Image 1 (spheres, rainbow, N blue to C red):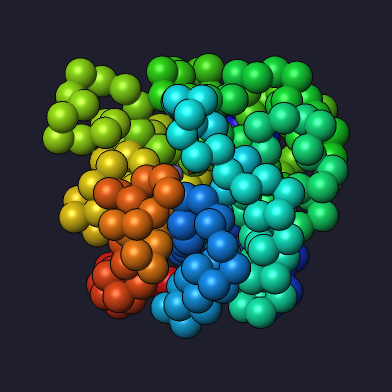
Image 2: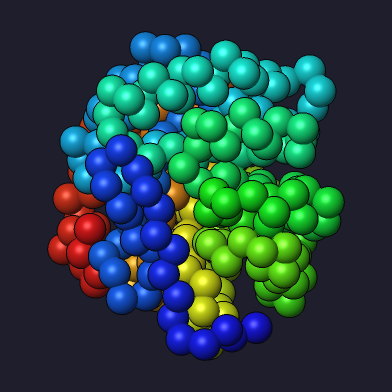
Length: 265
Ligand code: PEP
Ligand code: MN
């Protein structure tokens, strides 16, 4: 799996190039689970930018367990992300679920996310591999490291070398106190096995906002290159993943704490 030495993924954002890689500062991606309306996404973008995040995340197309749950605002949410990008200068990371939407997502997104549930959607992997935007590949909730690296290989083999690997927790047996089990052992293991940059998502990893800061700090101690943190201006009212979302104030606090450990922001 290791293709030479540590590889950098360089992403062009309105605020300039942002580099993901072992020998670069920690990159923080933050924002709501879903793009809900213009005010919340713009407000969140400005707050996370001020705190030091380099990317705004937010789902337009949401992979929900229930077909009756909020599915994301789709195309209109992409327009809101474009607006937030323009206002804040942050890069945008948003998920593709259907290859048919890829072109319009790529017009707005600086990095295209393939979510945990699509990690082995091989036709989607080939499609994101055949376009030029960098890809954030989340680990499937029951994927082995080998499964995950081979999924990344699909993207690389299709011609796109810019893949970032994101651990977001795997399914184990506790669902009561943690949503998933955040597998931080992947950090040194991936470092040994692959040249690709590493991201840790403690929000989906633990599922409860109060546990996110500890695991974010642990991820840095383990040597991650980047973090993904869900932030919502009013978590109690969020249309998805409210319980695991930090308020902007809590995010500010976390960012100041992160700045003093390991790889500085
Ligand atoms: C998300 O990032 O909001 C998401 C749906 O993540 P995952 O694919 O890791 O569940
Ligand atoms: Mn989410």
